[in-house]
Length: 276
Image (cartoon, rainbow, N blue to C red):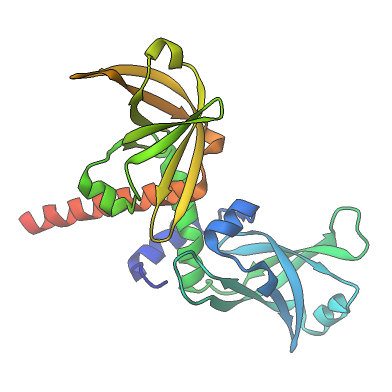
């Protein structure tokens, strides 16, 4: 943590402060949220809770009320501290911090008489670590829509900067793996080269395997062959364009590409400034 500049943290905060993130299984995984370490601190006591959603301004959490929590909230005038704990991929140590908040509403969760949903309003801007972790997800999500067609040619330099394990990969066609070479990547698809005949492959539903390092991640993304080109000098080879199913693109993959493209833009602006 602490990689981003304070300026970037501020940009994240101002840009995304009122956008809620729902802590699905995928979001928990990519942020490294340690769910067993999340608590509400009310007075000097701690209550385990589940974070349902959060923005930089508020959160919704679910907690058991049969342990005296509601009585304790009355005693503290509804003021609490929400304890977060994250261990992002590639980090050796967990990051733990408290966010001061006030309970603005509470209601039974579903049909349960034992569990309530609490709506919390943060009383201070959350710590920079929280803004960085959540901001990376929100930034990747926004840019994956805005720049979904931006292609990254897989040169030795881009492969290194993306921490791509190899351009040699596999595409699964009707469940059968076929060797292929990755030629480019984007949020919305990829171009690959493989042995095959276009007329037998076009419109096939496929899944493409993409391996990253540091930290190691393997994404298998569902899509469809939508175009084909010949490969000059290699009659048996064919270049195929894959369109990914939008809902099937993993958040971890979006974050990888977004951070690469963000770094490229920053390097470009820096070089332009140097020239000036």
